[in-house]
Length: 182
Image (cartoon, rainbow, N blue to C red; front, side):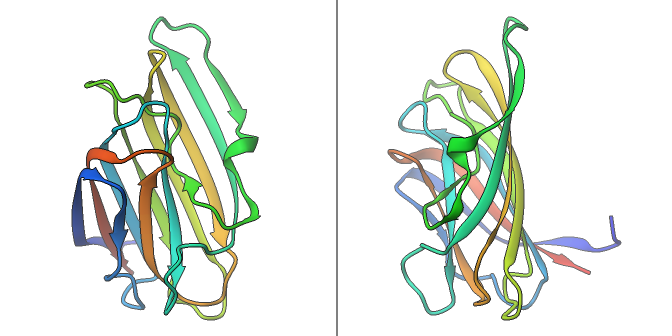
């Protein structure tokens, strides 16, 4: 919207992967980064795709996060739609992995797609904000639309992001990384 262009940096394809880690490509080249995840299919049903960051020079993917999450859903039948705050999927100065999807089913036709937008991760002055959105097919035949936002509460540069399922492996799917030219 501001006249910039998204530049492709890298793509990783999951295949029965415990984690998908981006350990290069996140630096001071861009002020904004976008991860897109497409057709993420978990090995275990009723799980979420999650992410966590790693500060430069660290190795544990345990940065402090403050976040919020909302979920909208509607059943295939058109009934039981709702929108609500997801108290169990946010963090208040937590160090766990942050949900970036609602529950995903593991049947052959069930998957999730969405994005994680990360702002100014190389700053050594400010915290690192993120926003995201995902659509997933829930095992009870409904669509979940999941919204999340927050920040890594560190002034250290974040130079790595890791994705994993909340339980089990990522059976299949692609995650791409882009940088925004301003």
